[in-house]
Structures are given as structure tokens and as C-alpha cells.
Amino acid sequence: MLRLELVGISKQYPAVKANDGVSLRVAPGQIHAVLGENGAGKSTLMKIIYGAVRPDEGEIRWNGRPVQVRNPHEARALGISMVFQHFSLFDTLTAAENVWLGLDKSMALPEVVSRMREVSKEYGLEVDPLRPVHSLSVGERQRVEIVRALMGRPQLLILDEPTSVLTPQAVEKLFVTLRQLAAQGCSILYISHKLDEIRSLCHHCTVLRGGKVTGEVDPSKETNASLSRLMIGSEPPQLRHAASTPGVVALDVQRLKLERQDVFGTTLQDIALQVRAGEIVGVAGVSGNGQQELMAALSGEDRRAGRGSIALFGQDIAQASPRKRRRLGLHFVPEERLGRGAVPTLSLAENVLLTRTEPVGAAGWLRKGQVRALAQSLIERFNVKAGGPHSAAKSLSGGNLQKFIVGREIDAKPKLLIVSQPTWGVDVGAAAQIRGELLKLRDAGCALLVVSEELDELFEISDRLVVIAQGRLSPSIPTAQATIEQIGAWMSGLWPKSESESGSVAA
Image 1 (tube, rainbow, N blue to C red):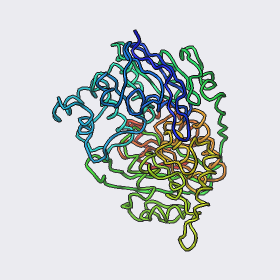
Image 2: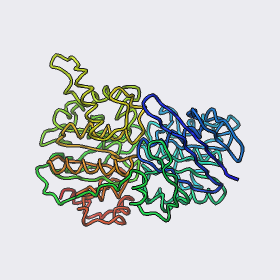
Image 3: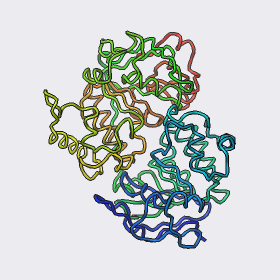
Image 4: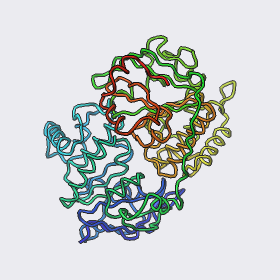
């Protein structure tokens, strides 16, 4: 008997048909990948299974019988759990309070705290139930979502980009967990753009393109190239990362010390870093080791830095506003798309105005036609699948919104671009495009600082690498001289002490 069977599922939105007659079969204990480019309809299909979206047509069969899943509560009652790509957590509540909200009230909050600790320990997913969500990094929030899903001992677990912000070590732990769950009979629907993961983890793969099923394969018998062709119709372009000759110092950070602002934050300790024009410096590290605090200090969100500790082309910007930093050429892409990178309810055109002032006249009047034209040009240049400039940010798939936000800052022709998690949740074709655009910026003389938990990405585009651990920054190392094993060891804070003491961070 099949655990789940979808027959002819269709869903039409005003601007796009997200699912078009989709059929899917998942057996007990099967890890089943759903593969497709951004906007192919994967997340909509998963939300239909979970009851968060109602289909226009089609039938859902659960353990052999037809069912109507009208809301997530009914899905959980059936034994279906889901980890969303966009987190569904309340910032002002603790991790445990968020989990408690999604459970029936048979457990008291102290029991939820205890159970979360048991589950996180059992599956190697470190979570502090008592921490407020607003104090958690994206990777830590991801772990809360996964632990919440596992709390219900599901028969079907849906994972939408579960490893997008996890370190390689955490990914391996998660895979052990998923294989353990499958061995116990739990079915898993797994969405990921990481083709290596799908090939090593999944038993079966259904490919979507334009809302339709275009193929079913055994991923273990495929190559990355063949899966890419099934997904996007071609292989992603190969990046050409030629050696560069760095120019003048663009960003100069010296003796940056910042006490954490809350009990769960990370104190930055003696951060020293230089980024030169015409180079990409990659920052690796386990989530929650000071990345958020460093990004806030560099972007101007946190202006407590001591005078002279942050300079842009020789000008002190340690206490300058984000607006002044942008005027001087510093642009920033935050790790959190919805809420920081974009306002969910505003249109793409309106979201352009968060960081771009070209369409604003000298007297402060807004040139709406110019705003729409700029948004449309970004949609076309970066191949963003959207209904147009009027589309709300929240209506886009995660990968398409990421392309729009990154494109908005790249198109501004920055002198220094700081990017956090540039290809989070983006398909292989779009990821190659974004990385290619970052390399073009570098070749045009822009200085780039890229924070990513994808080591493969950092090795692919960075000229130099540094590691952040426990609020400290390692010496830099040319990427050509580094290994993944070495950087992985440094992520535990185990870089050579003598080099660290010398403060040698510039090439």
C-alpha cells in the first residue's frame, strides 16, 4: 500500500498555473525527492499535501483512502509534518513556545521543553528551547523547524530546502536522522536544489518543470548533469574564476569589538579584516558564531562600533547610517529574505525603493514609472519568475525572491558588496547565474565580502577565505591553498594560534 498518492493535482493562481495535473506516489519508508527549478511548483505542491493550500482539481489518497486535507491541523492529525523553506516562527516567542503552538494541548509547556531537548539530542540537532526566536540565526531557526516536525513522530515528513543553511557536518547528521526515520517506516518528501544530496540520499525522484511532471528517475543512477538537464533543460554554465589582481583596500576593519546585545548573542572580539577592490573574500563558519553581529556592524544596522574600527576606502564609517554607507558605495544583501531583504506585502517595485534612490526626484517626488521600469529590468535581467513589478514579494518562490534581492544590489553597481547566503534556496541554474554575476562585479573592480555556510560555494567564487568562530576571525588563506578539511577544522576555532596572534588577515 502506498503512503501517499496524488492524482491530477492542479492549482491556478492569477498570474501562473503552479501545478498542472501533477501525480505523485510515495511508498512507506521511501525518501522521495521532488526536483525542479525555482517557480516549478514544488512548494505549492507540498503546501497542498500539508493543507496550507487547497487544490483546484485532483485527489489526495492517504494510506490507500481518499482524504481532504483542509488545513495543517488535519494534516498533522493524519501524521504529516512539514518543514517550510520560509520559517513559520514568531520572533517574540521562545523556540519551545513556537513548537507548543503547533501541538495539541495534551503537553504542558515544560513537557515540550523537555521533549525538544530529547529530540534534538536524539537526532543531533542542537536547539535551545528557551531562546527567543529573534536571537537565532537562520541556521538555528532551521533546526527549530526540523525538531518541531520530528516532535509528532510523523508518517510523512516534508522537507523544503532543509539543508540550505546547515553546515556540511550538520547535513551529515541530518542525513543519518532521515535514513533512520526511513528505516522506521517514515516516508520523506525531500525538496533540494543540491543535486549531490539528492543522489546520495533519495530513493526516487520526481521532476517538475512549469508545474508539470516531466520525469521520474532513480537519482542514484543519474549524474548532476543529467539531473540538471531534466530540471532546467540544460546544464548550468561553468563559472570561469580567473585569478585577479586586487586593488586598493575597500573595507578595512581593525580591532572591532562589540559586546553582544542580548544574552543569546555572540560578542565580537578583535575582528581584523581587509577586503580589496577586485577580490572576493569568503567568510565560512557554523551558524551562530557571530555572522549576524558582524553583518549588522558592517551594514550599519548596529552602530556601536568604536570610531576608526570600520573604514570604507579610508573613510571612517563605524557609526555611519546604512543610508550614508550606501551613498559611499556599500550595498548589502541580508541572509533573511522576507523581513530584512524585502517587505512581504509590498510589490517588487516598492521593494526596489528599500535600497535604490534613483527613481526619487530632487524634491523628493517619486517617479513611479521609473520605479516600475527598474523593477521590470531586474525581473528580466535576473530571470525572476513573477507576475510583474506589481507582484507582492511574498507571492514569489524563495529562490525567485532571492534572485530579485541579489539582483537589486548587484544592479546598483556597488563599490563594496556584502552578501550573506547569496544562493540560499536557489536552483542550480540560478545559483550559477548569481555566482557568475558576483564574479563579474569582482572583475569590474568591486570588492565583495561573501558570508555563506555552503563551503562549495565559497571555494568556487572566493579569492581568499576566513573563518568566524565564537566571535573571532581566523587568518585569511588564499582559496587555492585551502582544503575543505582545513576550513572545517578552523570552523571549530582550531586555526594556528601563532598566525592568529600575528593578526595576519590580509593577503
